[in-house]
Image 1 (cartoon, rainbow, N blue to C red):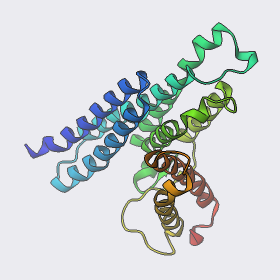
Image 2: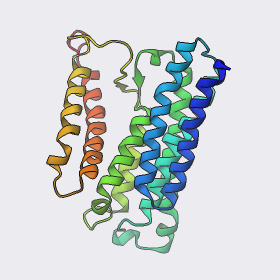
Image 3: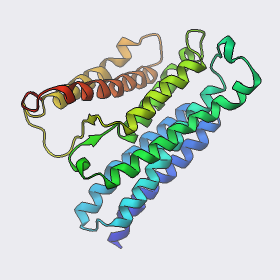
Image 4: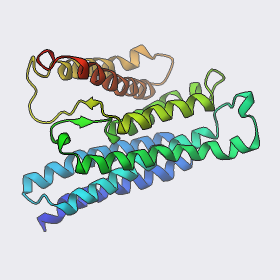
Length: 248
């Protein structure tokens, strides 16, 4: 029985991704994001449970990738798809063709997430770190951003072209050859200095979010802070990749 426990946890991740996708298509962004976060929680524990029980195997690895593709690939793509139906379109894109086609470009995110997960499974370099942005971090960033800043994203200062280019940037980040932080094992100073600084800044950001963003409800401020933390994760990972190894 115990060999099935990690796979059950992984399937819970998959189910969360399905519910998140359904909620996103219904424009229930907050519900979608909550289920993405729940999926991330299950994703965090399935591998650890398998190792603790001594039942790690190829089946669990493949199932985990399939679940992640839904929860962290399809679900955020569905959120962006729905957002494309509500953002402003610049004048040169104000035609029926753009209105029909642009929302479907959101599924590029799902495709690049699948590519990212496939590369991770066969890349021996990623046992101790990540090469490219992890799919959970990408999904959490987009979920937190859309939930906390929908009014701005659909306002006159933002438009479909900006959304498309921003999405393409993150598609590239998923598969780029830039090392990203991985919090595996114990952290030590100064070897893991940048990781520790990131964690401290993230805790401070999340704790002060409700006070920094007083113009929005408390949880919206927390979600906005979470989006900032995910952006900080990308920036600090890129900066750390340029530092000499003995200075990280």
